[in-house]
Image (cartoon, rainbow, N blue to C red; front, side):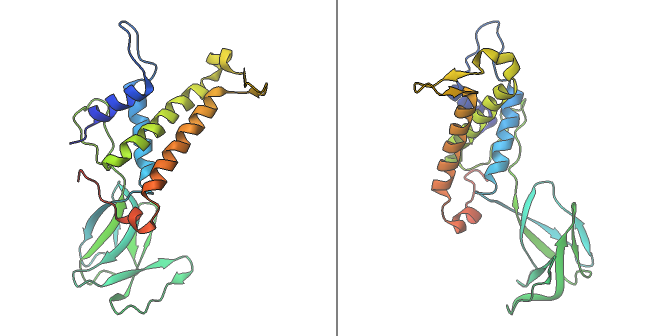
Length: 221
């Protein structure tokens, strides 16, 4: 099983952030953990993690789970699906399996219905991946295996952006000159942009089909 220890070690190898005796690493484990969480959160828009929760009949609202990214659809045990209520109003559908007379919409922390449920409802949604905890090295990481390397690129870019923000402490690197003589205001910026480009290229190459994006299942569920 993929664990936080595995991805932490792989990320440090990529960064070549070797710790000398008596010296702290340039990037702390907490900073890497924060950047990894950001990478996982960004991946959700390309590689969906499916989850569900149920709402008892008789209720007209329910608190949203903390890991909800996007509601996919809502259905009852008979397979009837509920139509969302959009800002433009009711989106009429001719599907014979529509849950007639029931519509749903989201507030900032709840899912609400236009009437009390007459059946138990199951909400199918895309979920954020569980976040690693910096001190729990054995905590499972649930992203698909092929996304590890793109995530490492994303994390590395985040670490370099930290150096860009710290530019006043790195003033000796603030201006460099290319072979053509063109000055570079901050060489770290080019590296960060390159790493994010590699992240996007690797993710897009595996998720070019929109249907694949929404149905890809994690290998570690």
